[in-house]
Image: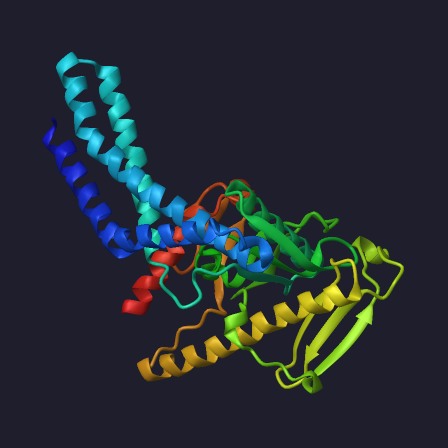
Length: 367
């Protein structure tokens, strides 16, 4: 075997070994066995919410175990593939082994990024709010482009997306949207998207065809669970009901089923109009409000930690630019990661940006 190839395989094996140590395969196997026992109980579905959590956790843990053990098996088989190709003097077989090695390197790197997600809420589903900021109708259009980008990213990975509320702009696009992404480590993965996104392009809404810069803000919070105990006093809430509306202000419901909640002490406002009844909309809006209050509490705790570290960094700053004119580029301003194909990025190909952001955050935390 080529010495360089042999050294690369050893390096990949060392990286995978460190991942296996972080994931603790023995503990992972024990967790799978315990969840399998719970899933096999005849009374499991007496409590549907608990049953869904058990089956979802089992599927996730089994998938994680299969992923890492599968990588180890493929990596262990790789030297044999090279030896067989060398003995047969088969250039095509050697090229196939090279391709397998390249795929393994990519998959191991991706799994390594997953091990960096060790925050308190990283395993949770993500609740994302996108808001149009400066830039008028172009900003509203950009906000809708970002909503599509995250939805397409989720579709590519077979993750669930539930849109809770959409506020449409008058001419085009959206003023804001709130939606949930349901996936293992969705919050930890997508939290690096929080901040201000910037779009530069020739405005399709400008009759003179001038270049326009517009902005949209992305907020990412973890979905709350019953164990979080975010207490909300009903006396501190203002509840408004109204009719759901669609694009252009068109009414989509003949009853006042949409609900807007205002948390008076913090000024946080959430709304939901996508459920069938006012009661369901209020319950969903309460969950969203709890998530935002939980994130506020987390940020306050983080601010105290940052003050102790004398850290002045902020997540609210501009974090990514999408340039469609006069050249084509998407660049993350924190990680310096960039690509020259904005169309692909806006169609949901953001995994490289997510991985770069996660690595950058981990390095920043260790600095």
